[in-house]
Length: 155
Image (cartoon, rainbow, N blue to C red):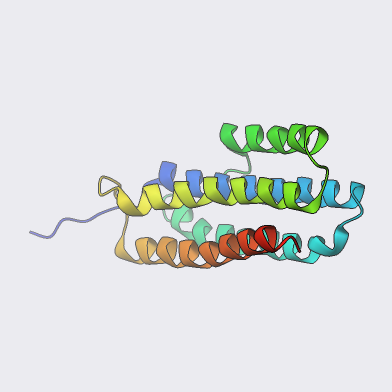
């Protein structure tokens, strides 16, 4: 007899929440960049916000299969990350490198959340959902590396 797996709505909502965190984090990054007059980074930040909005849209159908509503909230860790960005920009160099370092911290949290899902075999998710999560993670890892490269080059 074949085991039928279902998509865990808690897991999907966690992924949606980390994407909401990422969007909110980049909104905060745009505010800081504008304040520091380094708004040349804003198109990159907007691209990554749009990326997370697309990720959310791709995840929502998996919730709708179980008549669950997608969350529009953020995770506590994401809220703490945005507060930390404010404090760090106020205390440290008030420069582009500090801002990009903060963005990289947010990307690290995103990566960790997605990798935890991919590496944890206890989740009850379908193969197609797992493939979607792996695809989103691969796209995000490219963004993460780009932010890290910009930070390291001081651009």
